[in-house]
Length: 332
Image (tube, rainbow, N blue to C red):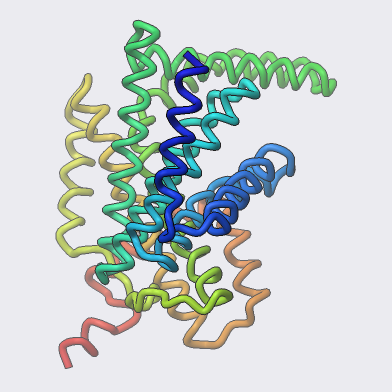
């Protein structure tokens, strides 16, 4: 099978490498993707964050050379990386590379046709969710198990590894036993809210790539979309009814309806947290807060989750209070 597959793929590659596609562009895209992957594996702490912007090479070359040329480079780069991944026994990288290649191409389409920031984030998030869901269902079909059981098995394995690491680090036995006792309920909770976690995670990855693309495009003198100011963004007024309805349904129902309501409630609260971030950014920009202070504030918000709840409330009540007074200015 290998003898048949590799020549076919490379003949396809050389047929694409005509006069309209430079080999240097292909090497540049492939090299950057491989560098991102290696960094995500080898660099502690910051490595996984670097891996989350693997779509940038695909986005960059698609915008620089045009969507058609970018698509050809993306296809050949992905094929070569897939062959390399299989040759070194890292098959799990296949979906990772395909996912971020599709994300980069999706963002390039949204950039090209001038969609708004909200439309770009929503469309790219939906694409990522569809790919994640499709991959998850495919793996479950191959392993002949349900999605829920597969998620539970994965979480149980991670808890087992965590407990083992705690014991190796000489963590007090009381702490280990406490985590072990809570493991079952923790796994059930995470498995229940997994759809909302996947939705939020996909959205944050999209936002991270859009923000990173802005820096890259400025360095490379490429045109970046003229998105609306982030500090003036607000959630749709009608979204408050989704919060109210999902909240009441969460309290009054049970079973799968309650689980669905919980996931919808979590996603809408996350949207209001983003709304609160927008308000915070507005006032920090208005009063010209120094960059190091902004970094400090955002760091505190990241480690003290209670402040995220405050941001969600600020975003929710902004529907009526209008802290930034931008509704009045828009009407004026």
